[in-house]
Length: 105
Image 1 (cartoon, one colour):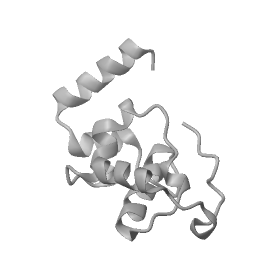
Image 2 (cartoon, one colour):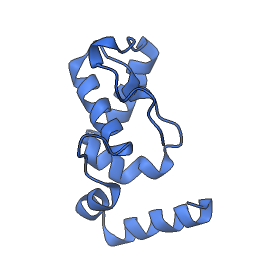
Image 3 (cartoon, helix red, strand yellow):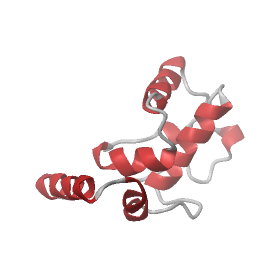
Image 4 (cartoon, rainbow, N blue to C red):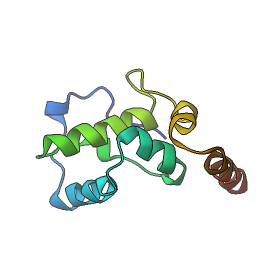
């Protein structure tokens, strides 16, 4: 994963569309923190740019920017192995590892 907007101030970022905001709301709908969301779903994210936008709702912006920091390992964010150890059972971690092996990661 690569973030092209890592040096841009949040104030200089383009405004997210309503469709993008709804997508982020959907990601947040299970009530997971960005940390747990990354632990559970990062292996399914192949393209991510939602953290390159500012959001009208500060809660959405904070959540998606925190997720982006984890995915791109910015600002001292925890790594996925740490998060998986914290949030997932051993069986869940093993399943993710098997999926990644199958997909060539």
